[in-house]
Length: 239
Image (tube, rainbow, N blue to C red; front, side):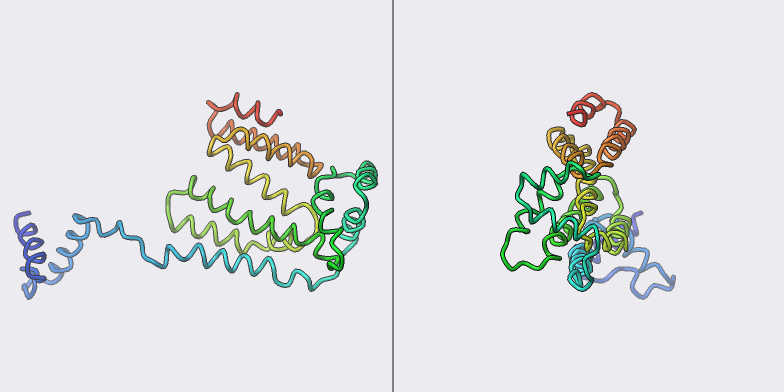
């Protein structure tokens, strides 16, 4: 220990270690390792690791936005476009016979009444924007639940390049928005933001006919995660 302390002190004063040129191979490397541990060299995060989430997000956005306009709209998208171009009273009356609640069609309604807008943009633009917002929500969840930076980066990269996420981002239906609301609900549970959890749950119920099942899954996951919050979670989701 005395030799090591003297070695570190000499390195700080002269820039050289007393082990430089010593006959024992590897002693200089050992001194460097000890010095890095004592002085907290591992605290400094490489600049690349700070920029990597931005690069992944940029690629994820490009994959979701390009080429959203290339394929033709299919039957369900055309049905959404037709409803979005109706007056609101007729829109609500038409959704009464649909299997899904009216929230998605109401969200597309303002775009459906913009003169000259392409038909695909009426239904696909909300999906792309919802999928892009999901990237941010997923990153916030990872920061709260995954301690290791490398594991967090891998999980975020997988989500950015997940084919299902890219597919539904470019489909003019409510699935990308449903993904956003489910993950947003889980983020609210992690942050104990019960009012926003109630809002996210209500939007799920008015967006998709499976929203009830996702709300139940969130309730169960929240109880397993921390059962001390069961009362607050139950009140928020039950509303």
